[in-house]
Length: 131
Image (cartoon, rainbow, N blue to C red):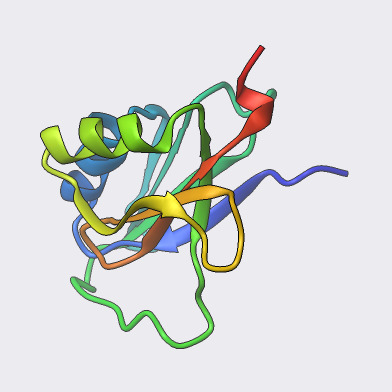
């Protein structure tokens, strides 16, 4: 077994696709409209879905905003250098909501960015991304 994707409901698909591709550097893997159901599914990620898990962005055509609820935590992205990633994201117009630095009570460097719908994305220094 493996994780295939995580689904997030988004209020404006174009705005969300711009964030995940232009700001976080993912690529659009596939996108399908379902007119009878009045929704669109767009999958974004850093590699083909056969290689890595993806994010499924679900846009229900008749809903422009969602309440995030208290159960959602965050999506985590592994990066080589959290400080540099924050600078790239900020330069691309992203909203850093927790600056890069060691996590409370530890040494792992983390930061948080917020997507256009308010979802938190953790940037986590990932030793697996290094050679």
